[in-house]
Length: 127
Image (cartoon, rainbow, N blue to C red; front, side):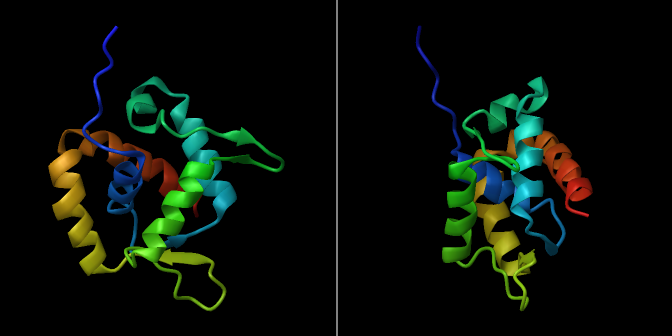
């Protein structure tokens, strides 16, 4: 059986997903990891989220890959935690535009509807 390579990486998925979230959003790892893990089990989100392996740690499922991606996005200065308590992520307009132009439109344009649905679920979880 020949496996077709996806035109995107897990990093592309998370970066693109950020463009559907508000400029500032809660960076609670428990809520982020738990929501992605729950959505991954739903058939309609599996294609985008299946590469994230979750370890069932207490008190919540944790994906080392998701954690690394969020850290790398901060190192690349696409995502930041500028607030004093590091309780919120901040995605600046220039970063949002760069992600949309260089990742979303080039690699995941056909997945926009599903990414928006995932972001909607995340917005609810992060309130």
